[in-house]
Length: 178
Image (tube, rainbow, N blue to C red; front, top):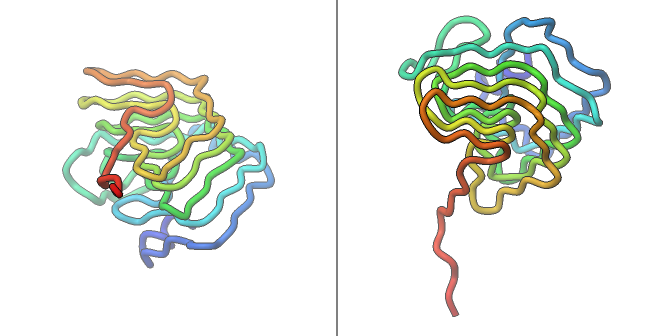
């Protein structure tokens, strides 16, 4: 799968373009996430108005970085795409599935350095023990953009910090002063 290839080869698809041409229905089966554990997606993913739906990601693991099976990565800083890199663009995509993980969950992306545009989250997000759940993105870093994104889904935190769009805006550099 694309996910396995990215992880095995640490390939971030810089400059590569992908287009979804049909709805993807996982029929309540597990999903493998893209760009997790230090790998960033730096390509362009055009959902072309289609929906990735009926997927399940259930991972209560907070310490180990690798399990067997589709829900194999630590349930922290995740989304349908774990990390969208500075050159990455995810656009015209609707996500309608179920995420259950430890914390730091975004419906579309866990971490955004690049751009999410015209993305919709219609699914369910819940943490199992920690905090930090967001409908679109968990963290947006300097240079990251969320443009015309909408959360219609359910976001539930067992402790604190739940948001509809983005939970954290991270400033990692000092401004240049002249």
